[in-house]
Length: 219
Image 1 (cartoon, rainbow, N blue to C red):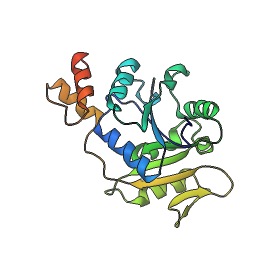
Image 2: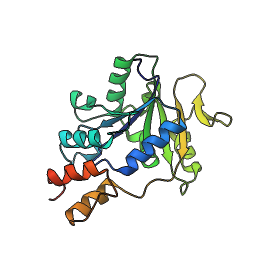
Image 3: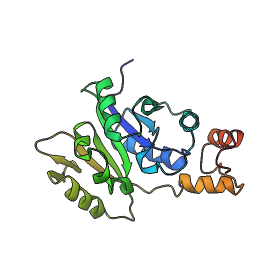
Image 4: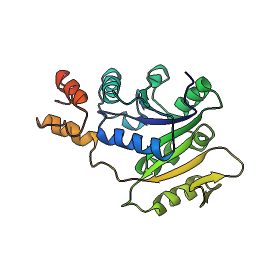
């Protein structure tokens, strides 16, 4: 069976994965006509070195449970094999090496992460490896994303026909997608668990059971 030709890459801590992540992934898959979405849990996210996070094994297991019944989704443990901390540029380089030049890669991120893109390691080289799919919110005008692009990627211009930002002399594209987010966060879920509340509306039932059985987020 041939592999995907248009592949979405959804990186994050996923501590825990929740319904907002899954909803966003499916929305991006449909909007960009992707063949598949791979979730890439960060082994050791550089922006959270000072914060306690659940083990990689627990976060990976919850993702595997969350995507059950979603044939277009998969989970990759690649970052566990790479040097720590987990930098996106290193992950994309390794994926490009493994998948070859013919697979189109789309790295998915929220507007909040995109706003800090110029603090990422080798950020100006990322678009040579994968296009971006930036999730903007209707409550945040597209002008916000436009300002970030003009600040960080000065050679990219907006194509009003294709509704995408591209550069003339280098690869990659920036897709800004307006979608209403599900009002849930991993931080809020951890707090609900600490307060002995129910999280099943916020995460798949199998993930809620895993959190309960492994006594996660109680401390």
